[in-house]
Image 1 (tube, rainbow, N blue to C red):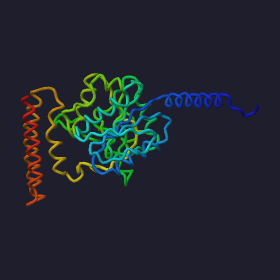
Image 2: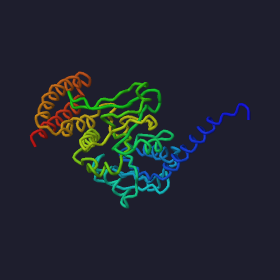
Image 3: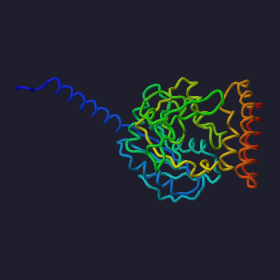
Image 4: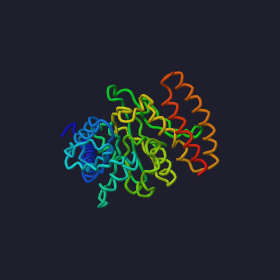
Amino acid sequence: MPGWDASGEVRTRRRLGAERVMDEAISSVIAGIVVVHFGDPDPTLACLHSIENEGSAVERRVAVVDNAGNLSDDLPGYDTRRIVRMDNPGFGAAANIGLEWLDRDRRCSMYLVLNNDATLGRGFLGAAAQALEVGVGAAGGPIVEPDNPSRFWYAGGGINFATGTPWQATSATLASIRRDVGFIPATAMAIAPAAWRDVGGFDPRYFLYNEDVDLCLRLRRAAWRLVYEPGMQCAHALGGATGSAEYSPLYLENLTQTRLLPFQSGIYRMYLGVAHTLYNSLRVAALMAQHRRGSRPYVDAVIRGHLAAIRSVFK
């Protein structure tokens, strides 16, 4: 036939065949998804609806670890399981509990840890399944503001070893580039079950904050890669449960007290202890100027957290 492009038809068939293989591979994935709940039930319900409606062919098992005890057993999603922990063991410990229950038969091929104030974008789970290729321990993607999806809270990141703190890119350009990274926040972190078991999950010493820094460092020490995947987009209503957006005393104390724990070298932790003493002195001064007569709870939170961090250096 005049004008018939045989090579073009062959390329199209190969592409369609590859897409079918990929779809079949994704449909065979079983995702164990744990949502850690605390505070207002509404963000958690929105999170569960997003899991139910994100559109991928991935099979999902969902558990909500209820650290507040104020959720109903009738939750969105097929067979979503509520695990009540009135003792509130903290974020990382709750995630450990949920994933252990979800994968008790060891059939899950992917884990996903979610903040209750995160909502998944379309295709998130399929993109996560593809990102967790051989050798990848964890994957994360763009995290945007709910009311402004063009504004990025996370677009890849790493650990600044001069300060012992994570940094997060917010560039729209970087948000579209798949690459290896040094840090993935636990806001929405997909994890290979083999990697999770290799390093033992989250360290329960971290009640709130820095558990993701610690997990990322332990995964990298164990030679697992961390990957940023642009298709794994979610929205995050920052600080809905803990007041981190307003720098609440709860946030300040818990963030400060475990800053030094993720690092192994005693000498390096002593260096960080000195650096953080200087930094927290400036933070206290800033809080006193900001809150004036109402600064006492904020200042006390930073001091308690910092003293706990310094004590950890000598344990």
